[in-house]
Image 1: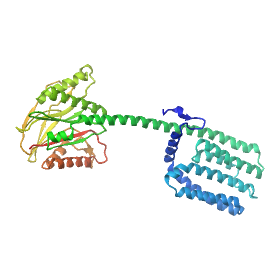
Image 2: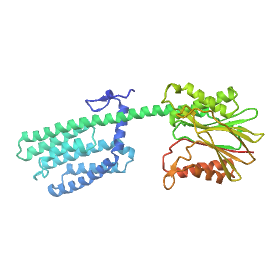
Image 3: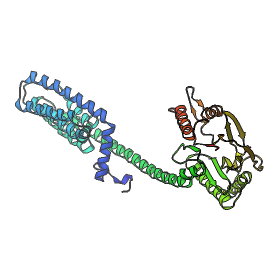
Length: 454
């Protein structure tokens, strides 16, 4: 069914579609649940006081007493019923009791010798309550207004010397104004409900698309099985800010080396995810297919491809790219070669930390001078821990003073946990992040990789 304003029946003030009208009533009942329950209690106690006062004034009348006994039974059924039952029958209950209460009053005083204490204002009040206070739909409000005010007018005309034209005027003025108010309000509320439903429908379509994009992105990431096969003593803490991520990790093993990388693309969410797919594709193309071996040349080629494919030199405003660390590990020689764009590599040996900083430029076009990426070589020893990461972890706000975690604190954490096995390290890093973030919103994608040298 197409959701638009044409599906509202403007004469009866309801949706033409029965299911949609039922959805609206459930929605309206949920929003007015507290008010309806309070009204239920208030009406009950007001009814008790009126019964007592009327009996003291006019004596017992069998019809009048039977009606109020019936109303008492209805109240306790409503009061003790489930929430679903209340939502379904609130409107019908209020309609029966309100119309019945007013007509019982008109009946009682019509046959009573006593004067009517409420006076002429009861006509306006019955119309006002029917249209504004009681939770009736448009047609029910019109019926309730007529069914309560006309018996009161007849009773007043019978008992008191009142000009009929005056009573008719009292009926027509509030009835005309309030029927327009109720009509406009009911159309407006249904329009608001419809707008909200349309917005939710569109949001669901967007979320479904993003969730599908997440499946594609996850399929392009290195699988956990392949990562464990390639780097058995490694772990990944991967925590996207949104459904899809601008951070990604990658690994590949050839005859003598293992390449692995952590990258942080421009932006997060959908734009970052698109860039991450470009990054993954380029790493596969350059390293796996084109057989590039040197990390600096790989980053240079990636940069050239990004600038070319995104037409960055044709648009000065196009600055999409990525910060990344690419490592080539020679397991036989226990040596790494790495190149880094705006990122760092951390080595922890015997609880001593060394940080190796990369080049201050992204993989992509930037405002500075375009210079070749450099590479660094580091000799490793057994039990060394190597860490590469994006900036999302240290940039996260949290803690008692709601400050950034900072690189200095991250370095202390890595030193403290460096002796633990990879699974315990992952748990420490994950729990520390959750504890630090607390109730704060995650501000960026997070990706951190650790590797034990064996």
